[in-house]
Length: 318
Image (cartoon, rainbow, N blue to C red; front, side):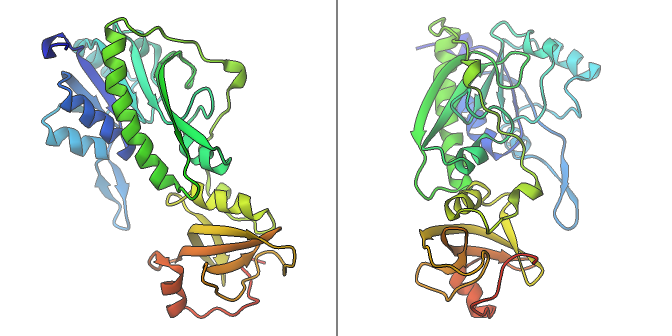
């Protein structure tokens, strides 16, 4: 077993909840963490109170040094980074593109925990697009970073199946834990010279762009399978939505049943044991968990107890 004193000295870069299991795994494995670099505090909620990112909160609780540069390309941060002299940089959902002076400085380079099986789903929203496109499998890639966006050689990968009704939140948490486990294993093997980086097959690359509010709007004229994939892939953030009586109506869980005898797309049917049916292009989408603008997120039956809907009403603005 490698002694603690032989472990490489790390700088960890991460920001949201996804990065937390990786940080905790490194702490528990005894890696010397010189500093944790995370995004600046952001205003959140109705009061717009400055709120620290999850990684900062955890790092401070463990007594680690925290750095929050507005831009890692700034000269002041680069000088501080060079003073740290890490052997390895670990990146997990950090939120900024690293400049060449950081990528090429550590003896072991910079490695990234990416929640897809690269080269599929490069970019900022791989988990969302895994579900939006109906992938049957996904996984974690531990990658040696280069100057491109998720284009560096692969150190290790681990595959898992996507569960039939899985939402973004559930898959996110599974991949975060899987990534943390694979990260520690990979660092041990890589720094011992037991892993050879493998170049990606760039010709098979796909890109997973950041999602916008427009991407989250449901088009009921689409196929029901596609609508349900959107609901799953955006649940709970940012949340797929339609409009109910001109108010934003978010949908977090749904299922689909094909049918050839349908009213106009977006028409609400009578509630059934499977949920509240809404007509799509090729069948019924059954709403199971919803949230009306300004109200609480509720299971559909709780929502219907407090909000009367008539069969034949339509979702959408038209």
